[in-house]
Length: 254
Image 1 (cartoon, rainbow, N blue to C red):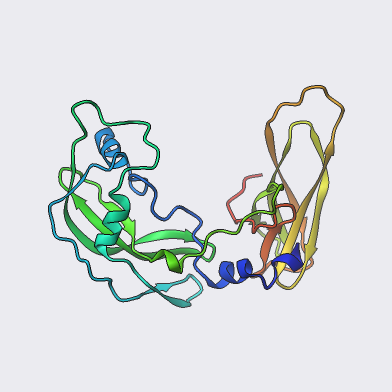
Image 2 (tube, rainbow, N blue to C red):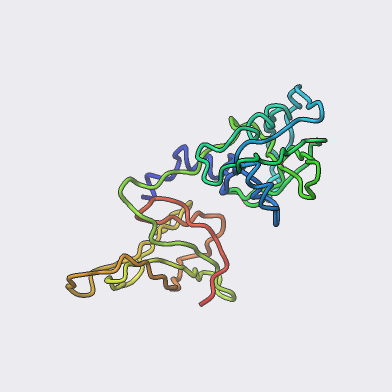
């Protein structure tokens, strides 16, 4: 698994590219707080109206500064293109407009701002179009980075599942690694194996059937364990040995 990942296109994109760990432009208003029900319903059904002239010119490329200090130039999309993307109805509509129709969402202003985005290289602030809607306190935000600059998250090995769900560093132990992993309700965990290179740390949960049962509930259990590395993790990636994907660092309580 280490050889499969190291030097691959996924590896290069994860370390040096723009790999978003969240949906950049979710349908509706997921980036902001509490939204009135009528606003969500109208947005989901694509009931938008323009009461302002949107810029059609594509802005010049903008800088994205990464947590390590590196800077990338990314192309942007115009405000009119952003509006065209979020202004159409959702592909699947559950909550349709009532018989009298949805209340129109009237766009009355737009400006170019920035919003935080979680990426494989940490949290960054990226350019985004911020739309003002009449009668709605919250702003409609649409990331302005052209999709051509964003690389999709790597896909797991076909037929495999992620065993190790998250990792964290152990306070006071320079070589300690705390793992949160998942296992089946009818499986027992024998231990965790670790394989290290200069670029990655591959972790594997050794599982096996605890006993023969006629019916086993399809339930995922989770647990934590600590492993000791040969040297501090540093800037190496942690990889799940089954799925072949990087494990994300998250706060873990033991």
